[in-house]
Image (cartoon, rainbow, N blue to C red):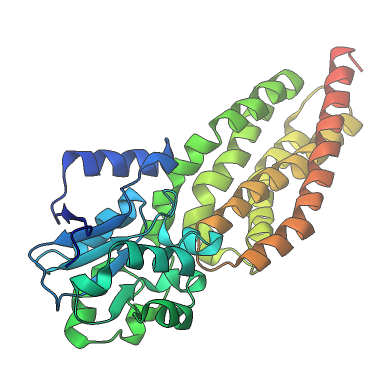
Length: 329
């Protein structure tokens, strides 16, 4: 082994710091700052025949891998993905061919192990050209299962089962995203609620909060059951459902206002709530492997203009109605 080869030590134990980072990451606080140093790590007491696993340098990804490998002796080659998880980094190119080749060469991996195999997570496949890696390093890329938790069974069987290859977005994973989105949209919620309170009163402010909450909190668990295929129209559907009670209240519950005013407020709710929910729902395309970059781009170009053309007239209508109400019309 070359004297320049530096191998850091890793363990499968979960520390308080690991748990704290996990909580902060799930809240979206300084999310891109949770990084481990790229390079080669040893787990247990590996030898020249031990497997080599490849990870992103996003701390939760690295933690998931090393804890899944408890009791297994091996090496972990950490790529510099700028603190981004495997799937997102593969799409951005940082979990990619050049970075993998660079880390193999810098770690002198050919001197550390006798075999010529590196095991990559399946979700890293879009960023890595396996044939190019083999050509440049003589290391064969083997794609492991989707989940790190399946690695012990994968190693025992020598291959991934069809179940290990399936990409899911189960309820638990969908619920884990909610705190991040709540934190990320806190300012947006304030921006929406305060002006709407002054324009339409407490009910209108509550409607703004409900529209945001529907996109952040209701959309993830309801995702599989909302009709249509893409996230935007699912969001429009959910937004229309939560807007309906406010529209009915405006149409029949506002005593002392003229018919045209009640009709105006009814229309305003139906115009401004669905696009808010749809916009936030569209944001979940970045959290699900059910979408692709090309598909997301199509959704953005197709539906964001619709959201704007609904939301802007709704705001103008509400301002006009508020002015009319203030003037006693």
